[in-house]
Length: 389
Image 1: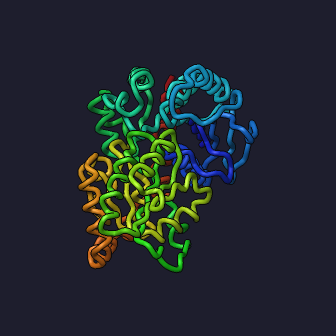
Image 2: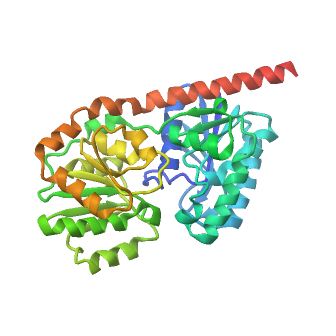
Image 3: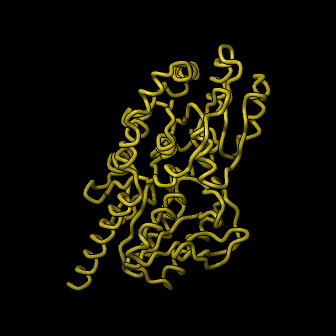
């Protein structure tokens, strides 16, 4: 099959992923390339070429040079969607999979124009949460556009979790038969082969997160303030960038924590991120909105216990294996759970005991096989229909 993925951003080669969407798209493509001809249509970024080859995947970068942004930029985003249609028309793939909400419109129209199955990969459905997550203006526009795009008659919907599937069914009215759950995956071999000599000397908490309001990194910093009373040498390592960076650094200073917190920004190599995870003592995800929470699986694969907010997609991803939950937005509860793990060696051992077995189900080979069968079913169905006509 000739598969075309459409997504707004793919990080430049040898640079860190922007987030869950481009990470998933590239990793899935790398595994599907064994049996398929795989293309990714995305934005042209500074320092990238119009056509690039990533390990056998052809990357088509379209339109004018753009910068990564999570909000706004509406005119360029509309232009990006119309450019998708002309690029896909030239490519003539057997199937089009649009991933990330900005690419839904162009992906759908392009597939319909050349009469091939249109698939949408849905990481999250934010109906009802847009304003809380993105602010009033961006939230209002996002709410309207998401609702409108997901009403398009896609041939198939890929949900990254059962939680997202339920939202597609109950908030968008999509037939469950059309939705396939294909979770995010992990390169376990890389985690197993990345070795560290020992843990950090000081008790270390680590988080990997975009620095945006709904990730609630401020709650983690407030929890650290409480923990510092009992554990003066506690450290927090924050991997990630985002619009809240200055605000969070100011909060750290106000609470007298600047010597305890390292803002590490983007970590360029996955191996380096794995080393930081493996050397730390506890992983935290304080977010109130997730589609899946892949970073928790990455922490589990690194063999460290976690404390994560008790929200449905995270419960589904972790199934209670490998860590503790805290009440979302409750930084005192977060602090208590981190303290429990840091001060109890037996609990640490207990929590990480069955993790290796559990994370093996997220190996990319297993995930990509499931995606491949779904694409083949839709492709065959489309061929039969066209043949009948």
